[in-house]
Length: 369
Ligand code: BMA
Image (cartoon, rainbow, N blue to C red; front, side, top):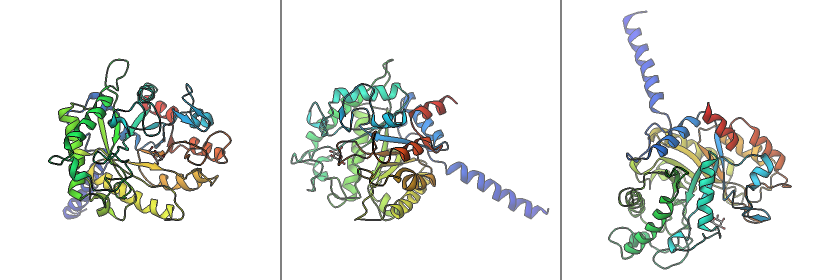
């Protein structure tokens, strides 16, 4: 082989090695340079797990399901599979008002205990926040112009800080048996490429949204000294990578990227939408060194008995994702996971058994290897 060819080949070889090395999800590490050892450890574990499979998550899984509420050790997912989900979602909506229970009637003291239990069992907690509108007192689903009034310099900035203080106090109380803060994935101001929430894209400017996000992170980190939070940026449906990143607040403010997209046959084709969006998401995650997740999805009431392995699994399997989370089992016409007797139970069992999907039992086995 002549010298020229050798040089070219080794250049290609090194480019491939370096490129792959640098294109890994999670390579950037946590954005909080003062992150607690526990938060760093969780992030490292999540990074390693990317190559093992996709964790399954469910909102309010331990709190209630179809026909039951607050029964010790009960979970619709566990009733079917014998295992809890690996990821458990919770929502802080109404904590900002000083209420004792969230917008879906989950008492915050119970929520805290569930979060501790999930952590104790080896699972992962993720927290969203359907906060009310600080300006007019209406719900999250209000589309008046608000964000400019709550960021620094705005007329309602002080009250907004009081709301953040309440969130910070809850997050700061999440401690394990040894008194160590339990790391959580915090996913505020979600679905902002839609406009149903007051922080949605038609209701605030790009720069106001970014300021809201950065102020929140800086306030929790620097004023409240909370360093156990892993920040998740998650949009709703989006058109392109530019659209996805339009309101991205920056790599120093985000650890994980995701999106929420549900099956809505009358509005769009789920399969092609997910295919396009997951490809964009994975590219964003790799080029920014962040982790990626399908932060909310599902088919309300799961009318397709083969949805889990017929639709969801083939879509997920093509991508490197940290987790997929389905929404809450609230009532017969509003549930996203099956429960005993549901027509999709046998397919959900196949989904659970698939080696690409991780529930809590397998998560613990993987962590010990
Ligand atoms: C929505 C619905 C609502 C709920 C909200 C926040 O998708 O489930 O009933 O209040 O999420 O959990």
